[in-house]
Length: 218
Image (cartoon, rainbow, N blue to C red):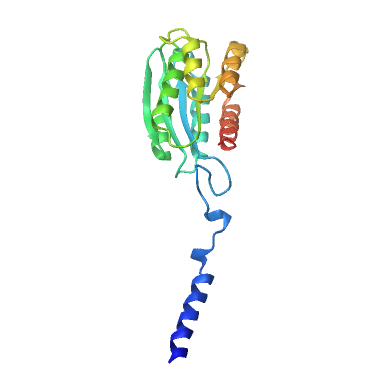
């Protein structure tokens, strides 16, 4: 009688120990905003200049880079929100992990109007402060010109980003290097970076570089 009780019990213990469900491999661990490969999951505000000067090559590069960035998200925990800006900031997509929705909000970015860079950064930072769930966060600004219409000053936008620990990354479409020093200094002060580009291929590479940077942060 004892054998009939003990043997099934031993068989159950062996089965439980050898079941793949109970093996804690590195690929199954996904905690604290870190994916199975040890990369940080990201929350990003993608902010696109939609001013009149973006017509043509600038607009094309912005769309190409933005789409490449979205395609490189994991479609599960990585998230982004989309803004376009002239003198007015428009949220084209609220914070979401849905890549199709993000792509749709990038296609057909408008062109026409002034350039409120500082307002755009302030708004993107505020969106991350309010709704980002991942610890690795950043505002990525694509622009081709200096600010000419913001209600917030450069100092206010910078202080707000620093206070909220949000790095700002400039992807700047400019063949002449104008405004590079100012935007570089701004980005460096937040822990971000400045990347100058002149075509679609460079834009895509710049967005991927920023994503790689964010992946290494906690």
